[in-house]
Image 1: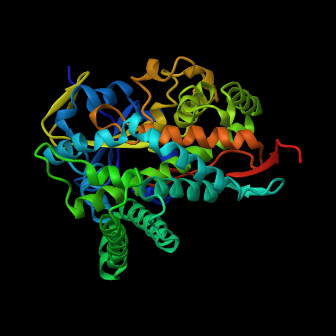
Image 2: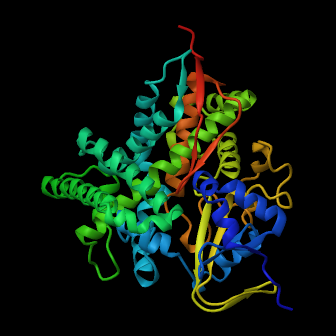
Image 3: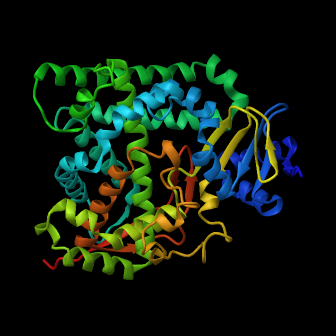
Length: 444
């Protein structure tokens, strides 16, 4: 028997439009509570979005029947104009071709070459912390994550002023994209007032900066064993390499997807650790037992299981990529629900990760739930997505975050200077009030 999917009217959507612009999650939460794990939201006279927190449907769409589902126009059109058509935004044969070629560059064995440089960058950024001062940790961690991507990609080939400009452009364009998505009724104004044109010009400036770095690397004929070398050396099945524009597309996406999600996840992790000091002590003790800085870095990162549990739980509560969208190519059905071709499905990872039917004490910080790794929860836990399109940089991100957490906890005790963790849902889930105080563990 066909199940009727509950609807939320266009009038209700418009009534709450300002609230949704600021933070759509409470609005969605109310609807999930009232309507169930899937509802249809009318966002225009002929435009509907299916909001879903049904983990089984998410697994079906992302893994079991993924061939019938593509990314929505949010990524394949709206995001493309800012970052190009790389692995994150491409579809079909092009995506498959790019994924196959790029996968080896992000294998654990390849990433091992980057760990030492990664640790040096992180340690250098943490020197900016002022003990006994209240610090908004997000800007520091945002810069740390950006610098880690820069050094992993380019070693020392990039000029500081160029990277500062690239960071500004990346963040300015994301803010513009959020406005476009949440205020579609202002599209005419963005275009006629030249706002959109200004941001597209910023994108061209970013591409010019990257093009110069790539050309300088090719001309130097030097090897640095960084990500840029790996990307330049990757080959398609026919032996050809990426075009220069395709390479720049992929680098732009690494910057966009690779630094802010990590900065967000680390910020929420340190906020949670500040509220749960016993887990700081556990991570500190684990690091000492693994030999500290005297141990092989890859071994230490791989065996930091308590630290990984904390990170997994942090990303459960505050997933940086807090929604995943798909559109079905052909008509489909699941558990009695019918979807005609072209349905926009938006999965709330934030709600799935806090679903009371899926998690014991879902609102409580319990890293020990991941003591046997995240595998037992693979059907309901999607911090890096799922299926063939799972984030290619998940190992890079986890290595970076484990190093960052162990490095900070090794040197400091963390105290909260906030009451509750607040969020700002943009393209990714960002923190709002990450004020912390640090006390040195090392007696002078």
